[in-house]
Image 1 (cartoon, rainbow, N blue to C red):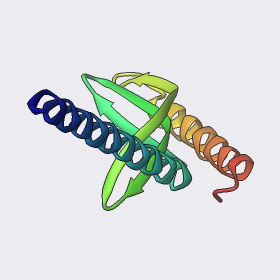
Image 2 (cartoon, rainbow, N blue to C red):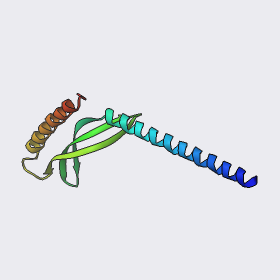
Image 3 (cartoon, helix red, strand yellow):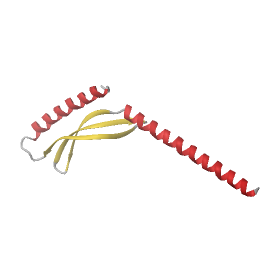
Image 4 (cartoon, helix red, strand yellow):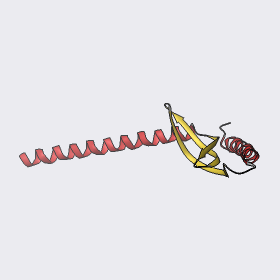
Length: 109
């Protein structure tokens, strides 16, 4: 009788564990869907270590937390380049246009 009780308790614990894992998976999938649905493409200009990078990022903000889902570097311009301003301006214009196009394609604009 005692053995049967132990087996039943173990079976219940395994079942509860499986239910908990299933619920956590569903919550994770739901969160990922929310992040994907909230995502949009944005342009960014970042200077680091003497190089200015012009990028487009696929960004999602859910519950006040920003997540970068994808990143494409459009151009990198050395800070000492004599045509730095023009190159960055041109690259940014291209990045803004591409981000807009991607948002239109994904229906987020």
